[in-house]
Length: 94
Ligand code: HEC
Ligand code: HEC
Image (cartoon, rainbow, N blue to C red; front, top):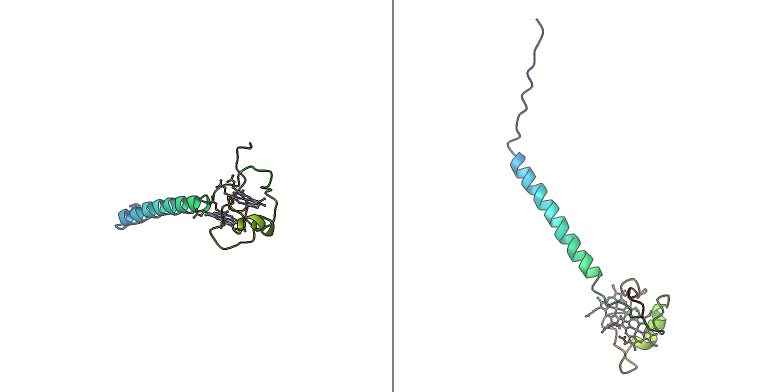
């Protein structure tokens, strides 16, 4: 007599909860990604000016942006090594 096994797919009683947490995890990652994206994008672009050379070093940028000159906006944060990592050159070249 052949052994016959009828496979009964048992529904995991926790499936509903697991799916709920999976959906919440996806939602959380989307929200976190949005915050990170806008945080990194918050720095104003490097406006197109002859004195704005994207390849300049931080020292060269700070020759103007330490508040020595009127009409030049003072850098409102601590000095960092690379300025153009955040202040990307503006897209519209004028
Ligand atoms: C010759 C002086 C000079 C140098 C060098 C210089 N800047 Fe500026 N920067 C200015 C002046 C003047 C303005 C204001 C004019 C304007 O906003 O268009 C300005 C504006 C800015 C702004 C504000 C832009 C805006 O639209 O509000 C940022 C950010 C900035 N500079 C970053 C930098 C970085 C990064 C460097 C180095 C790559 C740099 N600057 C080098 C003179 C300078
Ligand atoms: C980690 C990212 C980051 C780096 C690196 C960075 N900045 Fe900024 N910078 C910002 C953000 C964000 C703001 C806007 C702050 C605010 O509006 O309060 C800002 C604002 C400024 C402003 C004022 C612009 C205005 O219109 O008033 C100047 C000038 C400036 N940065 C210069 C520099 C210089 C020069 C360097 C390199 C030494 C530099 N930044 C490096 C993120 C950065």
